[in-house]
Amino acid sequence: VQLQASGGGSEQAGGSLRLSCAASERTFSRYSMSWFRQPPGKEREFVASITWSGGITNYADSVKGRFTISRDSAKNTMWLQMNSLKAEDTAVYYCAARVTWGTSRLLTSTDGVDYWGQGTQVTVSS
Image (cartoon, rainbow, N blue to C red; front, top):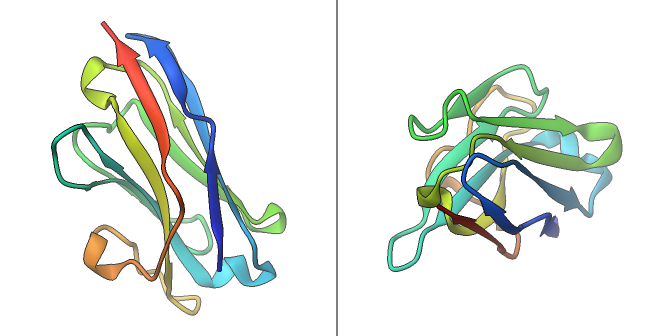
Protein backbone atom coordinates (compact mmCIF):
# COMPACT_ATOMS: atom_id res chain seq x y z
CA VAL A 1 0.00 0.00 0.00
CA GLN A 2 1.17 3.54 -0.69
CA LEU A 3 0.54 6.21 1.93
CA GLN A 4 0.41 9.93 1.22
CA ALA A 5 0.60 12.31 4.17
CA SER A 6 -0.41 15.95 3.95
CA GLY A 7 -1.57 18.88 6.05
CA GLY A 8 1.63 19.94 7.74
CA GLY A 9 2.66 23.55 8.07
CA SER A 10 3.59 26.28 10.50
CA GLU A 11 1.44 27.25 13.44
CA GLN A 12 1.79 29.23 16.63
CA ALA A 13 1.72 27.57 20.02
CA GLY A 14 -1.84 26.95 21.11
CA GLY A 15 -3.05 26.59 17.55
CA SER A 16 -4.33 23.58 15.63
CA LEU A 17 -3.42 21.57 12.56
CA ARG A 18 -5.00 18.54 10.90
CA LEU A 19 -2.88 15.95 9.15
CA SER A 20 -4.28 13.53 6.58
CA CYS A 21 -2.96 10.21 5.32
CA ALA A 22 -4.46 8.79 2.14
CA ALA A 23 -3.95 5.11 1.31
CA SER A 24 -3.84 3.70 -2.19
CA GLU A 25 -5.68 0.47 -1.49
CA ARG A 26 -9.33 -0.41 -1.07
CA THR A 27 -8.18 -3.04 1.47
CA PHE A 28 -7.25 -0.16 3.76
CA SER A 29 -9.42 -1.72 6.45
CA ARG A 30 -7.01 -4.62 7.00
CA TYR A 31 -4.33 -2.29 8.34
CA SER A 32 -3.79 -0.79 11.75
CA MET A 33 -2.62 2.75 11.20
CA SER A 34 -0.40 5.10 13.15
CA TRP A 35 1.33 8.43 13.23
CA PHE A 36 4.96 8.75 14.19
CA ARG A 37 7.12 11.86 14.34
CA GLN A 38 10.78 12.73 14.22
CA PRO A 39 11.81 15.93 16.02
CA PRO A 40 14.97 17.68 14.83
CA GLY A 41 18.06 15.73 15.88
CA LYS A 42 16.04 12.98 17.55
CA GLU A 43 14.81 9.50 16.73
CA ARG A 44 11.42 8.76 15.28
CA GLU A 45 8.78 8.29 17.98
CA PHE A 46 5.26 6.99 18.31
CA VAL A 47 2.42 9.51 18.42
CA ALA A 48 -0.92 7.73 17.96
CA SER A 49 -2.40 4.50 16.64
CA ILE A 50 -5.82 3.22 15.60
CA THR A 51 -7.07 -0.29 14.89
CA TRP A 52 -8.51 -1.39 11.56
CA SER A 53 -12.07 -0.79 12.80
CA GLY A 54 -11.30 2.51 14.46
CA GLY A 55 -12.64 1.13 17.72
CA ILE A 56 -9.39 1.26 19.68
CA THR A 57 -6.90 4.09 19.82
CA ASN A 58 -3.67 4.67 21.70
CA TYR A 59 -1.64 7.83 22.25
CA ALA A 60 1.78 8.78 23.47
CA ASP A 61 1.59 10.45 26.88
CA SER A 62 2.98 13.66 25.41
CA VAL A 63 -0.06 14.15 23.14
CA LYS A 64 -2.92 12.67 25.18
CA GLY A 65 -5.83 15.05 25.48
CA ARG A 66 -4.50 17.24 22.66
CA PHE A 67 -4.34 14.99 19.59
CA THR A 68 -7.07 12.80 18.13
CA ILE A 69 -6.54 10.03 15.58
CA SER A 70 -9.40 8.88 13.37
CA ARG A 71 -9.99 7.01 10.12
CA ASP A 72 -12.62 6.40 7.46
CA SER A 73 -12.07 3.12 5.64
CA ALA A 74 -14.62 4.04 3.00
CA LYS A 75 -12.40 6.99 2.09
CA ASN A 76 -9.12 5.12 2.64
CA THR A 77 -8.04 8.02 4.83
CA MET A 78 -6.69 8.60 8.32
CA TRP A 79 -6.40 11.89 10.15
CA LEU A 80 -4.56 13.38 13.10
CA GLN A 81 -6.25 16.40 14.65
CA MET A 82 -3.66 18.32 16.65
CA ASN A 83 -4.91 20.94 19.11
CA SER A 84 -3.16 23.05 21.73
CA LEU A 85 0.08 22.72 19.81
CA LYS A 86 3.35 23.19 21.63
CA ALA A 87 6.81 24.05 20.36
CA GLU A 88 7.93 20.51 21.26
CA ASP A 89 5.43 19.14 18.72
CA THR A 90 7.72 20.44 15.98
CA ALA A 91 8.76 17.44 13.90
CA VAL A 92 8.37 15.63 10.63
CA TYR A 93 5.21 13.54 10.94
CA TYR A 94 4.88 10.17 9.23
CA CYS A 95 1.88 7.94 8.73
CA ALA A 96 2.43 4.21 8.88
CA ALA A 97 0.54 0.96 8.41
CA ARG A 98 0.72 -2.54 9.77
CA VAL A 99 -1.07 -5.51 8.25
CA THR A 100 -3.26 -6.94 11.00
CA TRP A 101 -5.90 -8.83 9.00
CA GLY A 102 -8.80 -7.53 11.07
CA THR A 103 -7.28 -8.15 14.49
CA SER A 104 -7.30 -5.43 17.14
CA ARG A 105 -3.56 -4.98 17.17
CA LEU A 106 -2.22 -1.48 17.44
CA LEU A 107 0.95 -0.20 15.83
CA THR A 108 3.02 1.55 18.48
CA SER A 109 6.60 0.80 17.50
CA THR A 110 8.65 1.57 14.42
CA ASP A 111 9.70 -2.10 14.48
CA GLY A 112 6.16 -3.15 13.59
CA VAL A 113 5.69 -0.91 10.59
CA ASP A 114 5.05 -2.60 7.26
CA TYR A 115 4.54 0.59 5.22
CA TRP A 116 5.66 4.19 5.67
CA GLY A 117 4.30 7.30 4.09
CA GLN A 118 6.47 10.26 3.26
CA GLY A 119 6.80 12.84 6.00
CA THR A 120 5.04 16.14 6.42
CA GLN A 121 6.69 18.95 8.36
CA VAL A 122 4.94 20.51 11.35
CA THR A 123 6.56 23.60 12.86
CA VAL A 124 5.16 25.20 16.00
CA SER A 125 6.51 28.55 17.10
CA SER A 126 6.31 29.70 20.68
